[in-house]
Amino acid sequence: MSETKYLKTHEWYKIEENVITVGISDFAQGELGDIVFVTLPQVGQEFSKGDPMVEVEATKTVAEAYAPMNCKIIEVNSSLDVEPEIINNDPVGDGWMVKAEILDLDDTGMSYPEYESFIS
Amino acid sequence: MSDLNTTKLFEYHNTKGAKIINFAGWSMPFSYEGTLKEHQSVRTNAGFFDVSHMGRIELQYEQIKEISNLICSEIISLPNNKALYTIFTHENGNAIDDVIFWKFENRFVLICNASNTKKIEDHLNVNSIHFQNITENTSLIAVQGPTAIDKLSESFTIPENFHTYSKDDIYYARTGYTGEDGIEFMIPNNRVDEFINYLENLSIHPCGLGARDTLRLEASLPLYGFELTDLISPVEAGLKWTVTNSTNYKGKETLDQQISTGDRKYLKKFIYKGKQIPRTGTIAKSGDVNGLVTSGNISPVLEHPIGFVLFDSKPPTDLVEFDIRGNLVEGNLISKRFLS
View 1 (cartoon, rainbow over the protein chains, first blue to last red):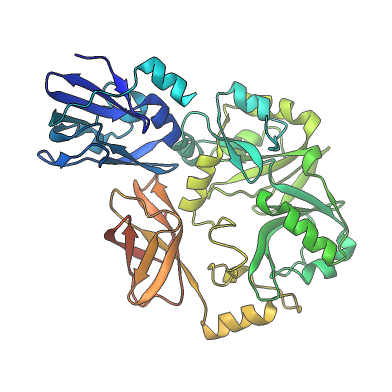
View 2: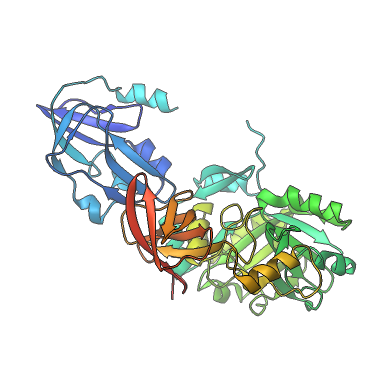
């Protein structure tokens, strides 16, 4: 599996063969506060890079997670439907949101050190 | 660093790992352990809030008649050791601020919203009311929750609901903004660290403004700047019960007219059992009456969105449609409280 990379819009992604796993960063979950609802896409839905894929409602505000590249959803983390707080507790692990088939590879995200200096 | 005001407990909040936000010109704790956790601790046990950003203004009771001319509630007959929630109103009946008066035998204190302290001071000046702003010399700590009274009763005489009491230089009232029982304490700054230690020893922990907002919303309490503004009257905001002043105060004519004709805006409570939250500014419609959400958030107890919506006139049905980022969803207007 490739290293975890980050976008300026605070998503992370990991590439494994032709599949990306996407979630939001620890910084993002901290800014949102307690996450109370997550609206996930349907399996089979296609997204272009930059399209909103997931809607996250938190006590403080609402946010969207955007597609890091053109992709087609193959699996969603349905445990977030009942326990959205997993994103607060483990954003880059069990709090993953979707897995998607890569339609056009675009691996231009930031490494963690780059992302860390971006948010600081 | 910045021009923001800080309370005497700012360092304490930082050492407790608080997430700090800018609120009405003050650096204030938003949360420590998370809004939901803090909310539940106040609903089931007890917590405390540093609300020292709120304005504290000392008045002279001799000017009670002049003060009465500016608010919509009966205050002249207010006995000693009582608290009064009321609203300063403009000539057109709209709200300048919602406030609490604390009346003691030897003192008369007004507590106003942080965002409105300057506005209230100007209003008092224009109306020749003498006052002293004591916000910076004191801290205001709200201790709230079903176990709060029991825990505090070993060290403090507990007044009746909406009554005040004082012990040495600590002035307090059995009031709050969470829907739970509790006491709000005004404490000299040089004693506040000792008081916080005392609360922590009672296992009463700090809660942030995030939980204060979800608690007040769940308790159906208005927040100035949202449910009450310079464009909304107390009657429109569903606070007709505060309109008890029979003397000729500013705005009386309009408020009496709004009560008798019903020709006014209407603030209503809504519930929505979906996964999107109708938040402040969300467009709403009930029948052909337009409205806007003034506040909306999850109810941590009910586990679905709740809030207030302000309609241009009386909504004809109990159904309300929200436009959430282009998604039209239907909620219900309710007249009873969110929590039974």
